[in-house]
Length: 222
Image (tube, rainbow, N blue to C red; front, side):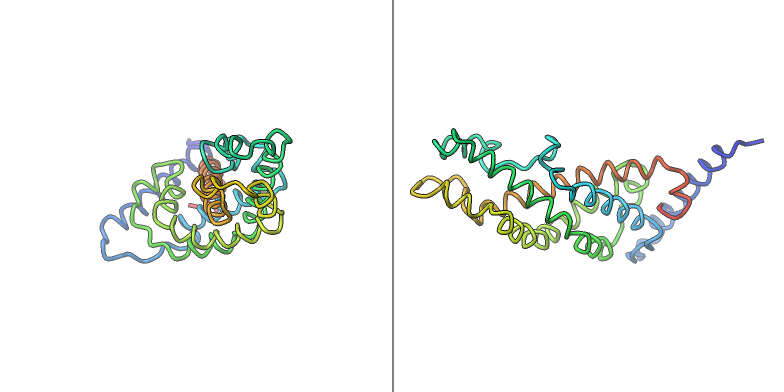
């Protein structure tokens, strides 16, 4: 007699196989998958990642996703700021960038949900077999859309945490700042890119964790 775990595993494989074949043999079916399918999986991963990164200090504490000043991982900025760096002002600015990333993450759920809802899922084999398949698909397919939507959130957050003001103080009279990307626009672009990279990094982990949970999968996550 089969164990409960064996039965669960068999159902998971059958569900994935059916979903894969349905898309492969229906090229006309560019229709969106239901929220209880892959969209449910990636929506859960998205929510989980954003919740974790929205916790104050989360971006800065994790060196894998820490947001740095533009230019050689912040090293160029340190050289250009001179005395400001010696006084620890660039460290304070870096922490402000990460605070801004966290604030934006806390407001980005609707943006990610909209991007997920608007996707047309066509790479079924990859989505089924890769632990982070849905995350990768979202990143490659909707990355530019998410950048455009998240960028204003980052801009507002940078203003709210005082990052722009700190940048203006540090770069006052320094003519080399613009060429190094250390302007308000350059900073917003860099922080948006790094924040999204961090969010996708966390989403991949969340997706893999959801896939490892058979009970959650059978409840309609996949």
